[in-house]
Length: 357
Ligand code: NAD
Image (cartoon, rainbow, N blue to C red; front, side, top):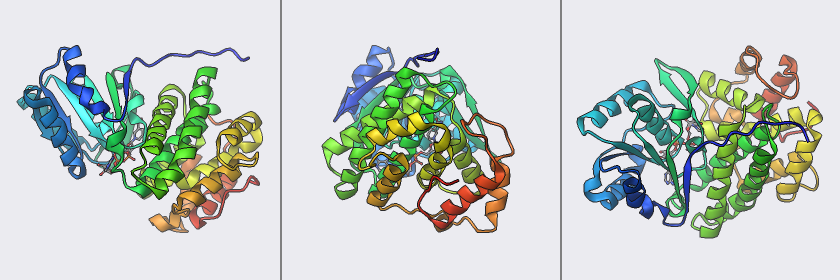
């Protein structure tokens, strides 16, 4: 076995159907009595339900969380936090709302309790991406990590089926890259394989029945494990490419991850045979081939496979490939511009991934 370093991130995790009912006890355990609740406009009803649950221990709801954590929204929320004399932040929603919770917590020092309702995984990471004047910057700090994460399976029953599929594959991507990360370790490998197994087996069931509680439980459990992978290891080609394409061509986050994942894994496959074997074991119907397993999963989920469906133009492919190789980053295989161009072209066209890159 190779030598390794493993640092556990100190978040308390409460998991289960109806788990958000434990929020009042969790706040009082931490001596907190004035929570500000965050959500997107779309989930204001979820936020109001939490406010009612807390009664006088809630000081208000701020429901303007938005994608990519725009600084103007954070500043407005900061004023509300101070005006209401909040002593804690409770975020309820997907990665966008968790991001706002992190942005407020790192600025004020207030404890952040995150109630994630998608599979994005941000709640388990010390990373924060913020957008100012259209430019997104990312920073990491252990203080960004939420103090407590409450995974309430019931709150995920309303996650639309298409977003459940793409958000779930977004989570799988964290686990895939954790397996070949330069700082991977045996503990994270356990999390990663179990996370992929849980999501790959449950997402197609959710695709047929969004309210299937057992499948929703498995998927959220998988999302927690995969989020832990993201928070504990350095991501490579796949995440960098998604970041580049999302930032430069305004492509949607989870959908871009979903389309690219089989292709980026195919690119790295020649140099990570052990990872490929491990993934083939946990992907359903992979028949010994992880690329086959991922192609099949996306087919079963019925998600869009082509970046052109989200507005990427054919003439953008060269520019995207050039940006993708512009900065150096960790990747098990050398990143070559002509091969990355072909990878992006296949993803643009919606072709199934092949290991001949
Ligand atoms: P999102 O948070 O933007 O959610 C998309 C929409 O779905 C929102 O309107 C949201 O309110 C709604 N929604 C979420 N859960 C729902 C539910 N259960 N029922 C009904 N509606 C629901 O999207 P996302 O994919 O969860 O997160 C993406 C964002 O998170 C991106 O900005 C990404 O950069 C960030 N992110 C950050 C990290 C990190 O470590 N910093 C990790 C992953 C993602």
